[in-house]
Length: 473
View (cartoon, rainbow, N blue to C red):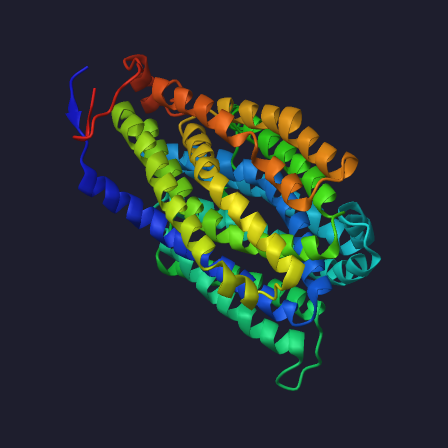
């Protein structure tokens, strides 16, 4: 195979075009969550802990639908690379149907059975009561959240990354303003407390969807609004879609259930620890927000090249994206540690809750560089058609290593909260080594398009040693 020079300037421009709007969108969302937390913190640490545990139920829903997002982006990006309009439309309709099923299910659980949900996450009666009030209202936002995520995934894979960003700007601004009005009772309205925060979330998500639809229509996007073409499925498409999505879905569901077990253990720690965990999850969103930009870039930049049959370019882009992501995440983690005092104070932490929140942030910052490297590699594999390797590793280590450690330290041995928390990340270094080996052998490139499959037949991946001069062989 002949040597090719990797063109860094055009690559970095493509990364920036995709990653920066996605990162900004998630940064906006996280900023909105931080403002929410600050406002709710003025009501008390019990309220912060209750809303934080409700967010863990939302995370479980995220695990239920994110497998379809990952599978959908696999098809969107590869069909976009092959310029297959019909494939994009049909795979979006299938993805949307599956995701909305998940969103409606969780919404009904939150609205109709909030007591059961809160009992699952904590044994503190005071926290349960507040969480029930919040869930009964915020459950109406769950299908809306899922719908906006499906639309954003399609738009990003078809070079419309700014539209979801503008939708998030409108949503976050609406949410912050309505929180101020509804939580504290401004502009002549009654003070609703956490119920006001939940109602603000529902209205903000509605605004999010409305803005996306308006901008997609104005830009003439030919996929998002092609409703009649979304549901023309055939047996081959459904079979191929489910076959590719099944490992991703099982990964997200089993990891979501594993995280639920972990949250059940953490939800039985002292109230100060529960409040600290809620604040930590908000700050974690900053790191995940930056990661999401690189994750989307990996899915699009690698997936499109695999779909169009340019395997060498896909391979060259993949490992560079992983290391770029890790570098940025390391810088961000260091900044959070350096600025932890003003940040945690603004978020209502003091005394023991401050100590625990800082401890969680420090532990996470140490593991985040490796953790986000694992996530980026797994998303890259998925976009290229290999939905199995990273899935098997993550599920295996979660259930064989992480959950037993967390359960034993938290529920059996009564270990300190920070030790229990650290056990959540003990598998990351081992998985990173295994994922790196898989990344460089190139066997994760498995196209779903005819163009990609034809090119793959003539492409034999071998272990490459990319040099600093930007060349690969």
